[in-house]
Length: 376
Ligand code: HEM
Image (cartoon, rainbow, N blue to C red; front, side, top):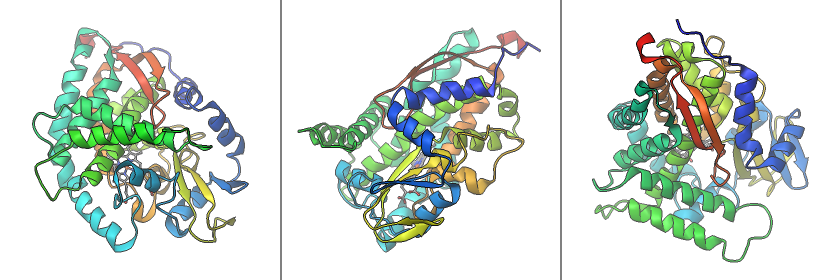
């Protein structure tokens, strides 16, 4: 067996932390400094770090789902109202039912050949000892999956779709950063959303253009952030043996998504007075839900043999009635990526942070096979 290059959990953690510290150093320092307490009030903003407090806010605290600066508010400004994140009650249940159909077990299996084809093509250079950048691979994989999910026309370019979804999300985040809005800052966000909707256009008069755009943004940005980060963590921590084991891999997938927490902060606004794990919350308070800390991403190393409880690891997909309907799809995609890479035991050869993306992630994440082809 070829000796493995030196790897370590601390190196894996250090590299992954760069996606936060290079893009948002002040915010990361503030959250790290306050994380030992389940929740911390700073004026009318409450930082929620604790596992129970995070879960209770999402399941028991009434939330203003249309408030500016929240995910629901951003979704509305992106492409209109009725986009799941901003909905409540029956309206929400009906939209969710329609969306969930395409994302259940059968829906995921229908989409699987689409992303596997893209994956196999992108990873082929590893066989010849050449490096592969996993960011464009993740973009095309996510774009192609969304095209198939939403039934776009045959001419739709999956990578162009992924780039447009990335720009729409990044512009929406810039538009919602704390502090006074820069004049005209809403214009690029609206233009990016319009470009995305044009790419997703369909002949079906009943199709909801806004909902399609929101789904594309939700699916693409999380996937493009998640896959390269998870692979880098796996490679740096030397977890390819677990990735190669069909019985352990599902658990490794869950653990890697837990420690990378691709959607690390959920901005919400309280709609009424309440308490979350003993912390009083007042109507109108801005709540910053730190999924990364609630799921123990910062202090419990990933290990498929000793995974944390599912009730904790699944918090990176939210909780309660709005919990992510794409979780099954996201897990299946990472499972396939790890299974395809594991025989190569790849190492990271180049990594550059994407400072403009809506979610913390890599702009470049190149890997190369550590094992020679004849050893496999
Ligand atoms: C690793 C990948 C992903 C992560 C970490 C993630 C995370 C999340 C989180 C934290 C939420 C908010 C949950 C809450 O408020 O309780 C959410 C909601 C949502 N996600 Fe994902 N997501 C991922 C992939 C996807 C994919 C692939 C899709 C679609 C194909 C998707 C579609 C959605 C939708 C539509 C919602 C809104 C649900 C609602 O409001 O009812 N997500 N996701």
